[in-house]
Image (cartoon, rainbow, N blue to C red):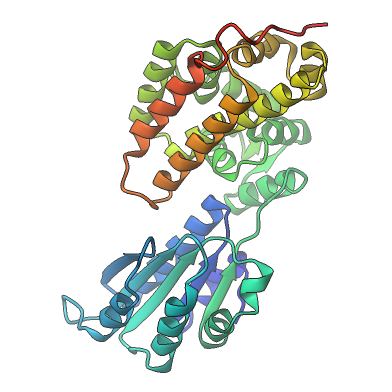
Amino acid sequence: MRVKPHQLGEHLQGQLQPLYLVTGDELLLVQEACDTIRTACRDQGLAEREILLVEGKFDWNRLLASSAELSLFAGRKLIELRMPGAKPGTAGSKALQQFLDNPNPDNVLLIVAGKVDRQATNSKWFKALDQAGVVVQVWPVDARQMPRWIQDRLRQQGLNIEPDALQMLSERVEGNLLAAAQEIEKLRLFAEGGVITGKIVGEAVSDNARYNLFSMADQTLLGNSSAALRMLQGLRAEGEEAALILWAISRELRLLHQCRNEIDKGQAERRVLQAQRVWEQRIPVVSAALHRHSLTGLGELMQQAAHTDRAIKGMSDENQWALLSDLLLSLSRETESTRGRLAPNVG
C-alpha cells in the first residue's frame, strides 16, 4: 500500500500495519515520517524499540531473531531496520520475504531506506513489502516547489507570509528543507498577528546569532580556520544540526568546483562568478578559496564531505563533529598541490 507523507498521520489513526517502509533522500521529510510512525507505535503500546543498521556484511538472521524473540518488557516492540543503500541484496531479500511469511503480531517493522530507484521498485522484495505493509516514498522538494512548501508548512502552524517575505526566505534556504524548517521555527516567534512580513524576515536574517552558519562558511572560504572552528563549536553549542552545517559547506564546495572547472578552461574568474550569481560582496570570499584549491583538490574535499555525510546519517561510527572540523580545516587551508600554481584569471 502506498501512502503519501502528508497522509501518514491520518492513516496511522487506524490499526497499525506489520510493516512500514520509508524511503527517500530528503532527510527532513524522512525523519518526520519516521517520527510520526514511532509516535503512533508508542501510543498503541509498542514501548520497546530495537535498531538494526544494515552495513557491511550484515547478518540478516538478526532481523528474524529479533522478530521471534520476546520483548524485554514482555510487550510489543518496534523493530527499526536502517538500510541506507536501499538494496538488501539476495540474502536480505530472502530474509525480508521470510519475515513477511511469518510476521510476529506483537511487533512492527519500520524500514528506513535511502532512495529506491525504478529498478528496485520492480524487485520481488519491494513488491512483497508494498503488498504486505505500507510504503511511504519521500520525494525531494526542488527550488521551484520551495515557496509552496514553505507556505503550506506555515499554514499548518496557523501563519501566513507576505509575498516578498516568501521570496526572501525561499532564496535564503536555497532548496534545503532542514534550513527552511529551522528558519520557520525562528520566524514564528516574531510573527505579528499571525503574519510574517518582509521586515520580519529581513531583521531575522540580519540579526543572526554570533555564531551563524553563513559567517562560518565565509570564514572558512577566506582561510580563517581558527574563526571558522570557533563558529562551528558555537553552532554545536546552540544545538545546530550537523546535517545543516554540512549542507552549507557542501553547497560552497559544489560552487567552487564548478567555478574552478570553468576557470581552468580559460574563462575569466569574475565572469564565471557572475555567471554563477555570486553576490558582489561575496566575490572576494569565493575568490580567496578558488586561489587556494585546484580542481583535483576540490574533488577530494567533496569526497571528504561525502564521508562526513555517511557519519551524520549513522552509516559509520566516526564522530560527525570531528569530521566536520577536519573538513573545515581542509577547505580553509592551502593544499600542497595548489601552492604557487593557481594564478588568478581575472580578465
